[in-house]
Image (cartoon, rainbow, N blue to C red):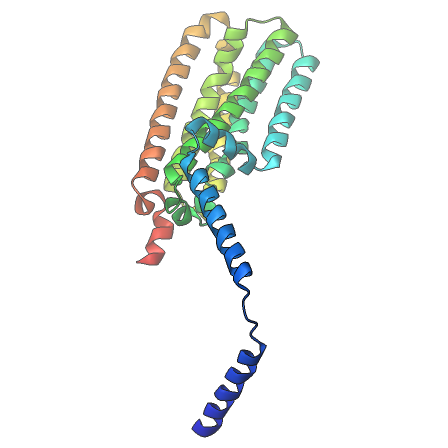
Length: 266
């Protein structure tokens, strides 16, 4: 198409669309302006009411996949079945240790969802940035996982008429170690391999626990409570350190939190 034909076509199209343009009624323009002003006032009021941190944490619950809650309920049901089907307190305490470690795996996909789905950069640009989202996820999943462990402790203690504190001491070290190691892997590993590494870590924790139970027959005896208290304290300290390091990495920005994503932009 030559320049003359192109110019003629542009003129004809301009005339065609100009002929179809309707004259705006002054009343319509006024109504539209009022509607825009009302919407602006409404959004201004909405922005003025900032969501508190507790509300923000509660709002994150709906972003946790439904299967997470179903899996946690399934773990509790499995512990109830195991506790009611055995009268061996040592076996029940071993099972609760293994299931407490496995509980951690249920929440890990949601903890590193930002890196897994490649939206960490988007979260950094939001008013409630990646740090707030990560802390909220840790609180929600930490509370739900702790509730699962507490329910399992109650089930074992009531079924075997055992001391709840001694049962809790058997559950806490595997739970803390599994959680701390998984958080360390999520912080350092590539998103594509993090889930597999977490599974491997939890499997290693469970295998080590079962190996100790077979080598040390009195591991769940009353005389070993001091050892369990020390193990729980050390594992909890490690878990607190890993949570702090994860939050610090998120606070440091995309290069520190998700270097595998950040390097694609350089």
